[in-house]
Structure formats: structure tokens, C-alpha cells
Amino acid sequence: MERTVFDRIIAGETDADIVFENEDVVAFREIAPQAPVHVLVIPRTRMKNISESTEHNPVVIGKLIQGIAETARLLGLEETGYRVVFNTGRDALQTVPYLHGHILAGRTLGWPPG
Image (cartoon, rainbow, N blue to C red; front, side, top):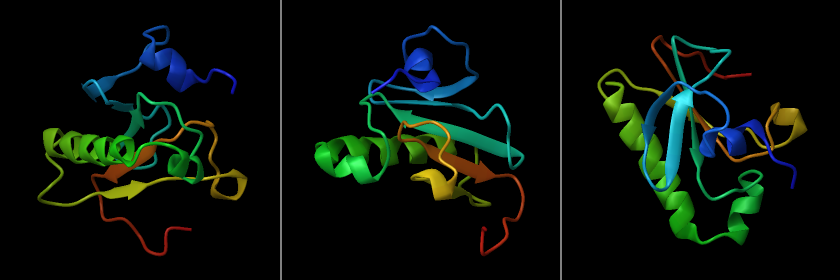
């Protein structure tokens, strides 16, 4: 699999506005936000998308979810709420072939989303 911008962020080769990181995940602000708060959370273990996650230890996915929850807590989003989105594939508009969750918050979010 070709190196992505997310690989370069993890390696410290590309700047990112990092809001949280630990040994399992890195969370950083989206460069083209779709909500007042828009943060991406990526696992340090490389996967293309949710479909590929079944090929990995489920602990990795659990750590990703924990990282999303911890990031939301640090951003003060628990009281008002937030949405987590995983885009998978072309029709879902996944633009970087690396598993990542979008935390969206800061306003009332519409439903259905698209």
C-alpha cells in the first residue's frame, strides 16, 4: 500500500494540528472542516478502511474507539454531543486510503447525513 499523508503525520514528516496522541492513535484537526469541531483520529496500526479492519486484532479497533472517546472528552464534547463517521470506499467519499474516524461537533448535526 502506498504511503499516505496520515503515514507522514504519524512519522512526524508532515505538520498537523495534533489534539491528542498516545501509543495507539493520533488525533488532529481536519484541514477542511465540515463542522465547527472536526477532528480525525487514526490508529498507528495501518489499515485501509473498516472492511480491512477484520484482518487485524480486534484490540486495535478497540484502542481506536477509546482514542476517539478520549479525544472527545479532552475537547469537552461529552455534554453537548458529537458524531463519529468512518467513510469506507469511493461512494462514501473516502479520500485517504487509511482508516480514520471523523469527530464532528460544535453545532446541531442534521439527519440523514447525506
